[in-house]
Every structure is written in structure tokens, then in C-alpha cells.
Image (cartoon, rainbow, N blue to C red; front, side, top):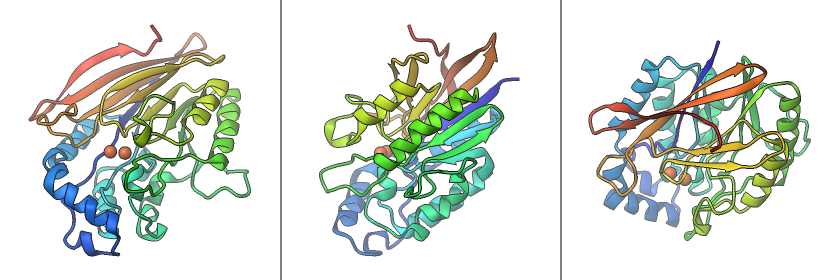
Length: 302
Ligand SMILES: [Fe+2]
Ligand SMILES: [Fe+2]
């Protein structure tokens, strides 16, 4: 029996709660609030994100992957609102979350931010690295599917919207990809930023994209899901264990009136036949009032 995995990203949930600009004052947060009020709030519409969640619900998937940017300026009130929104839609056992750069827009205490989302990041596989800051990378095992969640969220300077995986997570990623491959699991990696050089503008990119891509190429992966670019992308990495599809998805709340593609989510049908994994991808995109399937194809390297 196949496994259905939904992927969405970059909700950028609005509206901003009252007082967000001045809560735990930080100059960068004021700029972020201005950018939201003047421009971003017109593109990221919460009713579209809610319609997307309903569309996922109607598809009766087995699990959902959400690759970050739940909030906008990482204010405590935003995380409270975001956690409530997410919990209203999804059972934490059936949705896995990794944070994006907007979820670490400025430094904020863990218990007021990602700590509220901990149930969506629980770990089924103990991290053996002593120095590792939990919960990343987490591994969530669902039947014969392993979801490996990485954090790239680190507060950035004014001029950068990048991120970093870091040495400790990278070493753990290598170990987990190897062990899970040997145990016969389908390995889906969840990461906010595109995990290879050249897939994002330098000021938007992962600082260690080359190292992360190197690990994916060495150890292989069956699927890598990311957000951040707010657009639909598909790239392939070469690996001795088979080609690695790296798939990006548009923002989950994007209106049709934007220079970015309208909101979309991806549905993966994963199956095993004759000793090989097969993945079929359907793209569901917002048309202004509802979602339709715009593409449906086997995920095979051309
Ligand atoms: Fe984003
Ligand atoms: Fe982002």
C-alpha cells in the first residue's frame, strides 16, 4: 500500500498580532513589520493558506511536511497565533515542521518560539552526537518512510536572508542517511533553504550549501523538500545510490496577484515495486478561488 506525503511551505501567517513591532524591541523587527504592512501582507493571504490546508485534508494524505517560514518577524505573539493555527489543522503525529529564516528573524527565546511547535518536531531516533542541540535533525518514522528534519534557521544580518545547517547537524545527517538507507527506509529530507549551491541568490542562500549537497550526493536520499524561494522548482543531485530529486514549492499563502507563483502544495505518492522506490508527484495550485491539479508525473530523472 502506498504512502501519501503532502508538502507545503512559507505560510508567512498574517495578520500580524497587535503590538508586534514593539514587542521585545529589535530594530530589524521594526523593518520587517514595515515591509509586511507596506507590501507583503497584500501577497500572503491567510485565507489562501487555510484553503490549502482544507485541500490537503480532503486528499487524505498519510503525512504532511511543512518546511518553514510559519511567521514573519519571529515575535512571540506570532508564534502563539501560528502554533494555534497549525494545531487546529493537524495532529502533530501527522505533520512535521522545520523552521525557516523568518522563524528566526531576530533572536527569540526557544520556549516563546519554536518550543510552541515542539510536538511537530518530535524525534523517533535518538541523536548519538553528544553536542547536538535537540531536536535537529529529527527523524520521524512512519511505516517505511523516514522524515529527516533539519534546521537552517539562524538570525541573519539586515542584508541577508540565508541560513546554516552547521557542522553538528551535517555530521548527524550523514550518519542518519546511511543508517536509514541500510535499513531500507525511504528517506525524505525536510529543509527550508535549497540545499545545493546555485539554487538561491547568494544573499538568500545556505552558507554551507556545498557541504550539505556533498552529503546528499555521498549518501543519497529519495526525496529532498524545501521552500524559501516561493516558487516551483525541481533539481537533481547525482549520487551512487541513485539520483536525488530536490523539489521546491511556492508559498502556501501567495495570491494570484504577485510576481511569485500562486500558492501550491505538492502531493507525493510513494510506493515500492520490484525492490525499487517509486514516487509520483501531483502539484495542486491555487486558482483564485480553489485548488486544481496543474501537473501529475512520475518523479524520474530525465
Ligand atoms: Fe518565505
Ligand atoms: Fe525563507
